[in-house]
Image (cartoon, rainbow over all chains, first blue to last red):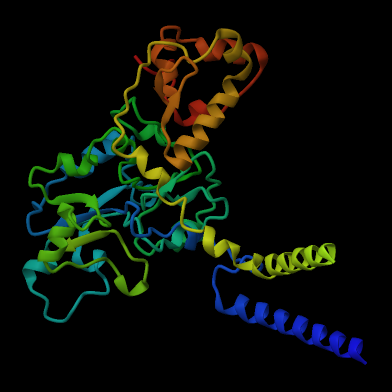
Length: 259
Length: 131
């Protein structure tokens, strides 16, 4: 009789433990028996890490000036085919309704709508391109930069379809034929890979600011760590009304604009 | 009697461990986040005048070294290589070319002989193409 009761007790408590574990696995996110590792979640820039960002003060940007564009394209050996269909660009200037298509409004001031605006890769915190890439050739670095590993790129162009900002270009031809003044310190790309702005990660390791920031005669661009509340960029973001490109998509761009 | 007690305690510890094993991760998380931040403001004090290893080693293993350099520099952003003799080098083909471009055929001679066709120079600018 005694033994029977004990057996029943053990059975019931065992079931109870299992039920508790089942409930815990649902309630506690870091439950090791049921773990989901999504790289996109893992590598989201978290507080404490660096997240490089840029603020573009479009009020100061000179109409017709292309210094940042030419400097960037020279430093990184970006080809110029003189052909819109095969255009390769890392940073470029475009009109208001192309850069901010969803922020256009009726009766917009001529002054604002008529200017041209700098556009480059936004290095989104929630980058759609890195999720689309089947080979992880494009990936989110620990410092928030959306980097390209050209060694891995297979040229499928999924990332180009995923990018809502048109920041990526495909090399339809061998780019070497279209580089007039190559800079020898940086590689070129080859035919069949996608390329884009790398936020000058090559210069950051040397302690230099991005080439476009340095080339600008008006100091239009401010570069800094968005996760550091004391950085210049955060101070400017604090004191100005700023906007991002297509914020409604939830990509959390790291490039901000003062209009 | 004592033996039974120890057995019971052992069993209890085992049961406890088994039931709390699942929560172990909770206690061990969030320790490895900051380690990469060190690469940022580290000055790249590059000494590109010496070879990183002996001739014999490099002849046999340069492709492995380059693959390792490529993966760690591009994907982890760790661009500094600590050579066995203690000198620091930038993980870059330019580091190799710093000395070896004296001989414009440095890579090509051997690869041609061995009929090896690496794709490095599709993008990286070789000594053959520099003035």
